[in-house]
Image (tube, rainbow, N blue to C red; front, side, top):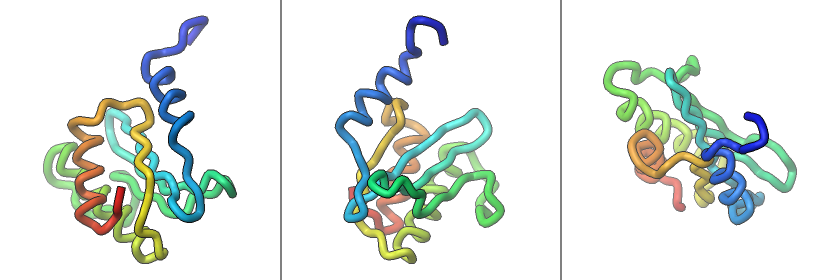
Length: 117
């Protein structure tokens, strides 16, 4: 990276100044790679990941369709796991990515699955 931080890392630091997950409202963090998309629900106070889901995990089944379709399915999957673990309210951490495309699709899928943010 060198002396200058990448654009996403600067945005990410600004977001993390404002967004922090507690046990009452954990943080839904999203990571987007070229091949897959990953979502974790994190309690920042204890430093533990409570729930996670990704498009490359074994329990993910909706492999057909575009990456946007897969993102929505991952959002629903992480929401189902969170509701099963007793988590309803979260704060959304877009991790420096712009809120459109796959990130927006995952957020919409998580809302459909029963998460509030």
